[in-house]
Amino acid sequence: MRINIAIDGPSAAGKSTISKRLAEKLSYVHLDTGAMYRCTALKAVQNGIALDDEEAVCDMLKNTEIRMTPAGDVFLDGKDVSDAIRTDEISLAASDVSKLKNVRRDLVLRQQEMAKEKGFIMDGRDIGTVVLKDAEVKIYMTASARARAERRYKQNIEKGIPTSDIDTIEKEIAERDYQDMHRENSPLTKAEDAVEIDTSYMSIEEVTDTIYALAEPFLNQEG
Ligand code: DC
Image (cartoon, rainbow, N blue to C red; front, side, top):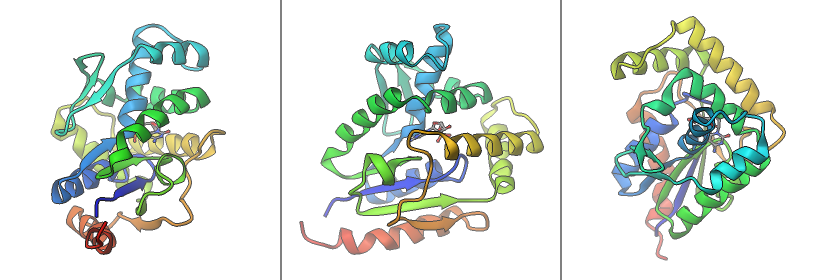
């Protein structure tokens, strides 16, 4: 049967990379929900909207189209913003707008609508706890802040994105973890029925295989 897989965890734990791999393996669709918060932040910044002005950000969202291609490119109102949403500035701004209750409501509804047909691997912070509470497989993916900073640094270099040094990235990651785990609305927490995977010392293949093994019994079920 077709299922949904929810993958939550702190930033840079490897959620996107693993979700992409799994999506290829299963011929499922990967939906990176963080990109939706990043698009919201980017547009607000571009329009000079204060990141804590909930009403203005929500009004803006009413006329905002966010589209993601199967290849992982992100389009904001028809424009390719795949790289523009990955800067350090927009990472922090995304964390800011993600605190706003009505912004979350808008984006969560979009995510639920998209995943109705099943066959989705959705990654974020609140997928197992809020967006897809009935997902057949729920994963809570973690890694030490140092391991995540090292990966992000390497990724930035490979992609040619301007980058800070590893210590600074580690500090920013810790800061964002704190914000994401302590906000009032849908803070990052492990769903009771999620399986926790610490990826600090695991390869991409090992993590992908572990999740695949958890999904397999469902995939083989009729229905
Ligand atoms: O996964 P990411 O780093 O691209 O996410 C960017 C920000 O958006 C991050 O600070 C947490 C927030 N976010 C969220 O609150 N809920 C989600 N489902 C996904 C991301």
